[in-house]
Length: 151
Length: 226
Image 1 (tube, rainbow over the protein chains, first blue to last red):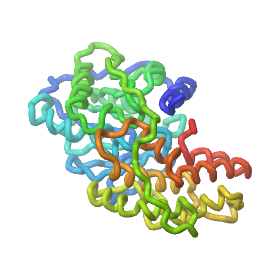
Image 2 (image 1 turned 90 degrees about the vertical axis):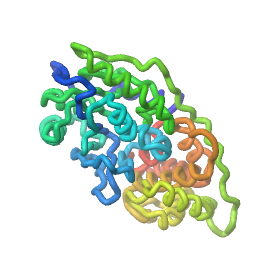
Image 3 (image 1 turned 30 degrees about the vertical axis):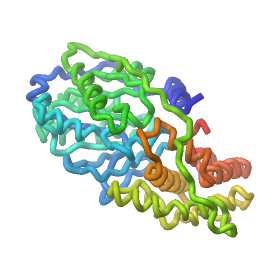
Image 4 (image 1 turned 120 degrees about the vertical axis):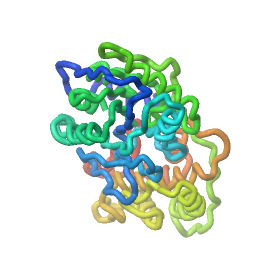
């Protein structure tokens, strides 16, 4: 059985955080007027930034111009070669720039964010602390739409 | 990712999750999910294929038109392929060294070229590229039965050290292969199955298990299915 099949099977059996309701923010602007940001759980960071600890609940700022990024996720259970070949396969920043140039999206956010996907089981820190803090930063920067990418 | 979608949406942001595990997103119920059955680690599917990546984003942005929570499957499935990537390894140079140590030294030029080209390396979480041969020397000793607690790695975090060794190899290996990008997990398979370093790492991992070393110390040295 391939590693991906095994990991997806493992995922089926894992307990997940429960949400009684699904908040739903219908966009108020068209996509062509919206500012778009990427938030990834790949634990990306620049080499001059602090790396992610194994149970890191924080996030790192990624400038729109940054391309020299390290994939800091601690799990050995996914392919890393795709990111080494083309960071857009995890963090599609060049694609967003193209879509903005083509007028498909309104603008690319100046700052994007990375969390670590390997969170403590309760995820209480990102629910109550770092997640809302990141949301405030996105909102204050005028972001309308967030694309969330895992690894 | 799904947790952040709930948090962000509560704050008033519109989100789209590129989901990689349908069971998880079905249970966590984020507002908008494009479920992509692509190799784990490649949420946009295909490295170096801008057209395919733009198509994934177009399908994701289309979900913003929905009036209620929605999960849509991307129509294409991309299987990971654990056939090892075709990559030459350096010939044996110093027979007095453990094979993995000799091999790692022989790959240094390719690793340096890769770093110069990309401008960044994933090596360095716990050890530097200079320390990779020494770390492999310790793994060789573990594989030969040396007590792990009395034979320390250059850094005590075995998971981080193995990450750095694997990154050193995968970055060097990708510099040595030609043609289209290797499939998901092809580089992982090459490292663990064909390189002396990977074989040594797996033997050291088995030895630690035999020595009743703490589970996290050895298990996460390699992918869980290995």
